[in-house]
Length: 212
Image (cartoon, rainbow, N blue to C red; front, side, top):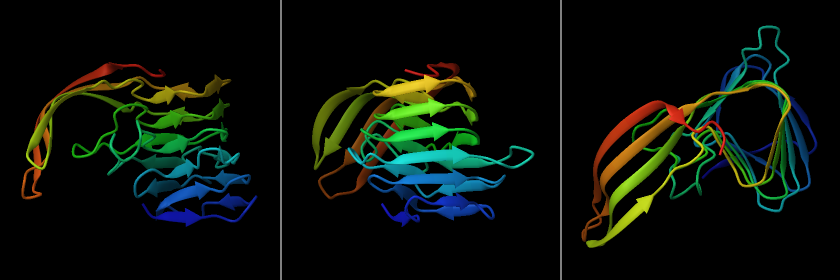
């Protein structure tokens, strides 16, 4: 995936709606990112921190109308994004301080995350404000096909909005319930390398765990 580098230990104000490659919070650095009422859309996820990086992201929205958003998740799936973090991935030894803004998953029927649709937490998240919109958790039962070889798989999704394997401290803000997607079928590649995707999707809105 492409990535955008920000100034070390910087304070950045978003000047307008922007579409960006995922923004990497560098090891040992602190990035204060003010949405300033605008929308930042990631090509995959919007922000990520590297495992063991000891980086800190302070995300806020200083606009009067509090209309700032971060959107991501299109093209992210369980295979290439761990278990999720469609908008933000906070990996081990890193911290997200969420003061404001709305985190919103782009709903893409072709690519959805398994768990932690909006936010995946391996490190520490302190939520003081803002809104985490309802995400998706995918539970898949069916066949994975690689070069014509068939394997039966079951992948259970948890935490439609937020999946926590680290620490999640919620002092304020809102986390909305998500949607559980039940997926059955076959995915993978045939012996010629052609994509196979035969799926049936059933959605159950409002029953996905907010935080798992």
